[in-house]
Length: 127
Image (cartoon, rainbow, N blue to C red; front, top):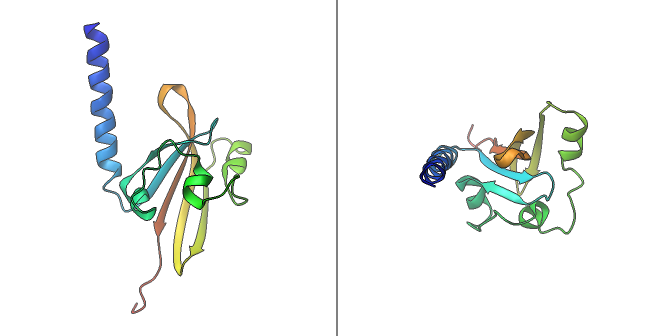
């Protein structure tokens, strides 16, 4: 029993370090379970971009776009057809320009997951 407790403490420490690192990036990141489309992780920047709502546990397209089905531009079908490849694209919304990066990654408990990262690249007006 003590070994299981020590393993759990070690896992919690690793997760806290991951969260600490990812929460300090200027990238917005979320990860979804490929089987359920449920958001299993969202960093602080992503949560701020979505009104500081808790995103984990919600279906991707419901949480991100208030939709009732997968977005037509979702890169997951491309990623599943092209294992090992990443998908890079740009998106304009509300006069803001974003660079997006998507890939399939190994996740906890042997699951595969979809990771989406975005960074704002809108040029300042006085540049």
